[in-house]
Image 1 (cartoon, helix red, strand yellow):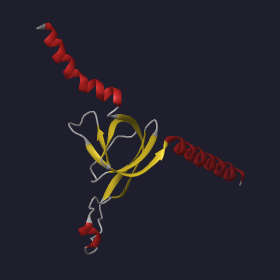
Image 2 (cartoon, helix red, strand yellow; image 1 turned 135 degrees about the horizontal axis):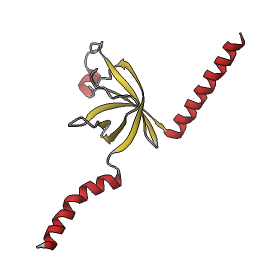
Image 3 (tube, one colour; image 1 turned 120 degrees about the vertical axis):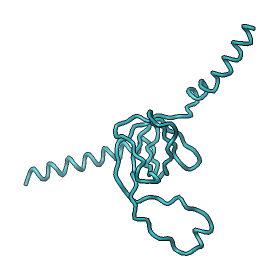
Image 4 (cartoon, one colour; image 1 turned 90 degrees about the vertical axis):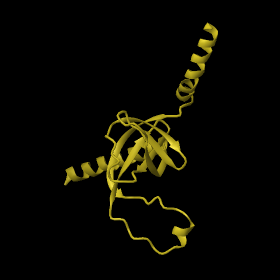
Amino acid sequence: MKRGFWLVLSLCSVPNLLAAQFGIYQHGSVVRMHMGDCMLGHRGMMVAFGPPSIPVQDSCPEYTLVSPNVVYVIVGKTSNQLIPLAEVIDFRLQKNELAVRLDDAKRETKFEIKEMFVRSDWDRIQRHIDAQMKAAEVHDAER
């Protein structure tokens, strides 16, 4: 009986251990947000060959999510998909979307992936931008 109990208990905990070990959820930090045009999720042959669609006037949040290896630029599907800045969030890739789980949410929120960068390249670009801004400040101070 004891052996059966421990076997059932260990089998129930295996999915949680696998999720933690194999990193189903990754961790990242939101460093930037701005409102931009909503990306339309309508894809397919009928949309491609059909009449032109009516432009959407709604604006959606666009976030820069920095993880240890990859930097994602993600866009919400609606204007009410908000993530706090400087928040460490859990996320996972699901098909062509990024599924985000916030602490207080009961379920995941899905975002369209607009761009992806290797973290080392993104860091290099940010250092270059910082250097240009410092050079502009020095140039303005000399005037």
